[in-house]
Image (cartoon, rainbow, N blue to C red):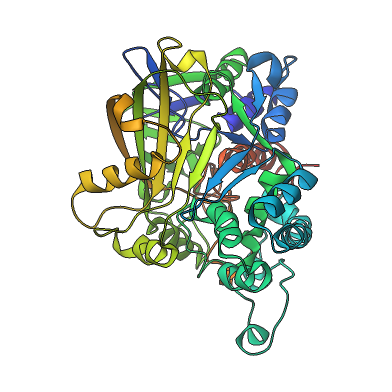
Length: 469
């Protein structure tokens, strides 16, 4: 939809064919008995991407279409030893103070120094990995990890360190390491095999803040959809595209499941278009990158309808850390067996739109991974972990719903031999482009939105387009 709105403003006639009966992709909502839940992303980082979209596509700015609220604290971290850290929203000094007060031992200063290095990695990687089309020599981004890790003797002198190696060396305190690694783990990435450039993930949150869309993030999807409609973008729901039509060596339209064909000068795919054509779409090596990304563990979401009001002082977002970090990371690939508890994120928005009345509360739990045995047992372990963040949770529980999702695409990362990049927005079939989390610059609401801006630029300005300014 971000690409559609921009292309319509540039003068193109645009039609969106959507397999499902509604817009928004993974940004969905579940409703029951007066309760509402976001089943996709629950928070909006880096809202500047959508502010830019609304400025470029109409007179109403984003804040006139949705209500954005800064979440404060940005996140509460609960550790197995009982330690609690409340991280202020977009406050470097406040976070340094909070970390030192909770963890002591110079952790605040180590956090500050880490942020300095993470900012340097962000400055180096921001443009090629967020604001520009993927370079033709994209493998170079895999060879150069922009994170300026502190060097030590031995193995780390011979190769760039992984994220886990760098954090263990630089942060020392296991709780501070877990705090930082939670931003990586949220995408199903194992810090032990992820490049140190993943430091940009916690940096973005710290530097640009965390925002909530009043009414739920589904309201952002509604606003983008309405902007598309205002720009005369057509929508065809319940229409599955089964084939990319090719003519004279380029994409010339789409064929739907009912056999109808719609011609077009350009085709933009919001999912991997490779199954829809026999034409090889990616440069050698990029298909392998995409396949590697998709074998990561999925995400489980548990929607909780609770009786009783949200207590004073409750945090919007709480990360309840696993008691055994190594066991959790080992289970990412093979499944969570009995006794292994995942890190659980608890979202408790104080939003009347999400509950039937002030005597109830809607809560969303999420964790990365899947059970090795009974599915109900994994859900139960998630609820048990969440009890540390939600007083009296089991006694208040009216009902719950479980959603199992596939792998969550992460933002593109430099380093790691290019295994953490995604296929470019252009394909080897002229006229066919791709957007969304499984293409450059990767997953997350801001990055998916930026992919729309990149594709619109490539179509409007041509192959010489060098990215946003």
